[in-house]
Image 1 (cartoon, rainbow, N blue to C red):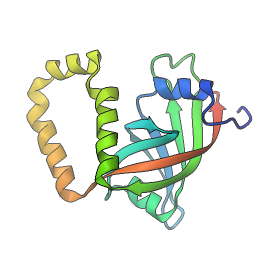
Image 2 (spheres, rainbow, N blue to C red):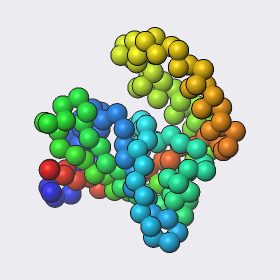
Image 3 (tube, rainbow, N blue to C red):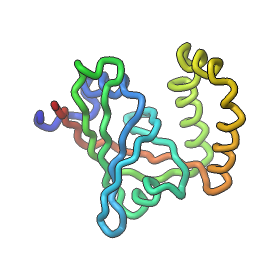
Image 4 (cartoon, rainbow, N blue to C red):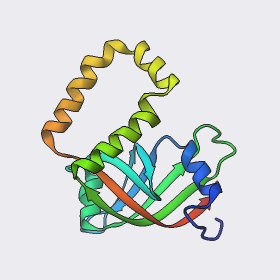
Length: 157
């Protein structure tokens, strides 16, 4: 493990850019750890993760704001070390944050050539996806887990 680094270091940001999913580690009110993979985007030095307010990740952040995020560069997994970011988080449900998150996620995950090609190849699954998202929305409110990074570390296998 390398010594602690600034989470805004160019090397750290490079691995984060090449990651598709962030794994967020949280603690419950009883101190029980949980790790969940979530889509993410970065905004003004913060890491935003999208979920719904009833999920374990959101409930745990509300109970204890200390979090760790794990990033793995998926484009070059053999070359990239893992990056662990430690910080504090809050759950945000305000509409302006949700709109900003959705726009950034659309450009990061949906409106890329590979994503468009994949969606066209799996068009038959659109009805199932809509039903899933409608069910998730009916059970809770969309939210963003807003993480303020404090430390970064490279983890080498």
